[in-house]
Length: 295
Image 1: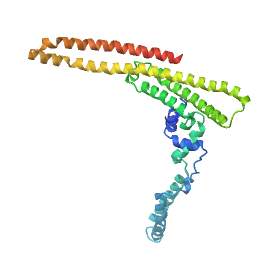
Image 2: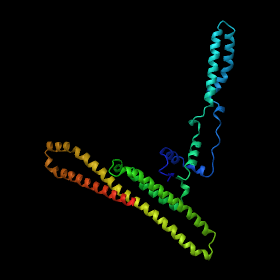
Image 3: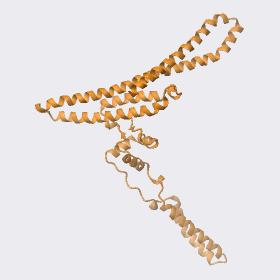
Image 4: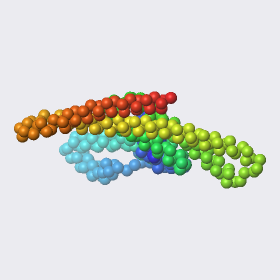
């Protein structure tokens, strides 16, 4: 089922959180990434090369300064000092890229704590309900009829992730309360408490039924979209066949068999009209189901 993220979280952060579920679980359990080595202390190939070259450069400068090429020695000395200073400056710089991937995930996980949910936040029953909701939402958002704008794609893009988050949030709360309730029952209930337990169990059951009803509404909407999707693809195939009809008609006319094919060709045109009407009805049904979802 993956990580469920509040739609209000920036997309780039949401993508990072969804891609790092196991790491988020470790952060939730109290894990902290180790402190990074300061950049100035890190060894790099260029630093090692610079260090190894130092004796050679010093010896060469000494020879040049003691000869008639002393000006060249001063130039070499100045150049070498400049290179060393630049290297020292670059080693002391701290850039965003120096942060490790784990620390980046850790910092965002802490900053957006409470705005994402993990698999361990749901019990088995809640997880099954959430997967149903995610499957229905995914089928709508991935459909061609949605991408082509036959549905209200803009509202789908906003409302459906919000529905997923709301359902996930309620299921996480329900899972936590159910766990507490089971632990309470496992310790044994005194007769005086039994009368109080029954209304609480009804509250849990009614809450679950209300969430399941929302998921079923999503599934009905997805079902209407699936019908529209089938009609959409069938219509496209019929239109493709109709575009080829002139070549078939030409072949039939040349072979003298065109009279036998007229009824079949007419039926193809009728099928295209039927599919067009079916697609319109399916889209209208999907719109009705969408309005019910908002209600």
